[in-house]
Image 1 (cartoon, rainbow, N blue to C red):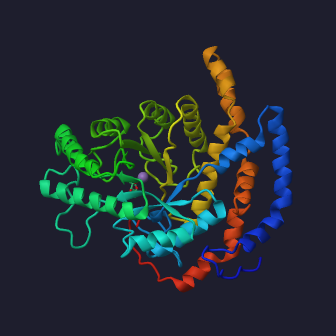
Image 2: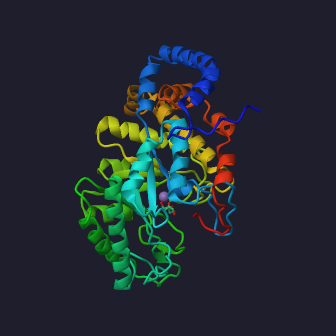
Image 3: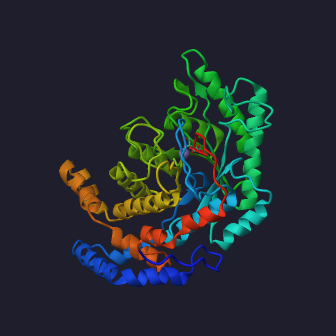
Length: 437
Ligand code: PSV
Ligand code: MN
């Protein structure tokens, strides 16, 4: 057992010297691995430092709701020391960012992340070196004291008063986001039906688009409206924005600031998500991602834990699209439910998986790939992808992280730091319950 690190005096969770001490123990091995990989890649004509530079430029956002223990609708098993309010959630996100150097933005969800002073919250985040990504609205749960219930839908509800309440909430989120410095509102609604005949598919979509266009009209010029589709749950027969087709239809009707957000878990098993990515990019409507992994449905498992190859293929399509039509980077975010791990550990490990998939995609020899495609040589086209996928890019990712001030072995540092045990002394216990919050 290594010694538990001291509570830092700085505004960041850990002192830079603590990270430097950790890195000093690992730098010789990392340099050795990086140089060996550099030689191997050099033989293929790939400059490892160029790949590392691309990796250094990659970043994603953390969802506040993934910093606490998630749960299923059956139960939630909290751990001592998990965050109980937005300030504590920010502190935990700061841990992930300080160690990984790839997660400098936080995505807030309202009303879960309510605060009394959002200008002060922005300053608080800045002291951690964090900024704010998209704000998320919540019209899938009823809040205490709310005038209307979302039990029969929200933006697509048959009752105009319910729709008006949902619109007002989204506009409130935009206003909060402006103070925070966010540039996007993500809208996911659970609206749908459980019985055939319960809802008129067309009229429900019409109502949703009409209500959402009111939100769209309140969007600042430099903002985006990210529409997140999901096949099912909580509605089990039909969902209003169930797939990328419905999402794209809505985005195109709303206007150019509306884009589609792809949550990897929101598709039927085996759906070709990488092709969806290519399609949405082609029409300029790929707004962002919620990364997670799944085996059965919207499992919200850790990114790369089940199907790292799919993650790689998604990044391959993004690299391909970017090479063809350079444009703004989509909003990258994690959206997971950490039911059995320390959420910080899952966020650290998932960040590493996502950055690694991105790094592998950066290794693909695009000329060889295109050449094989054009010669109608499926095996060599596949091999162009395979050669990149087989490379263990850990040394590139760790080197980029270390050079940016992060830790070489993020999980080892985090465990040695005793962060969670310290927080268990300081933070209030979380209640039992079910659900993700
Ligand atoms: C819905 O399943 C979702 O993916 C949306 O992004 C929500 O905002 C988030 O999970 C939290 O419920
Ligand atoms: Mn999501």
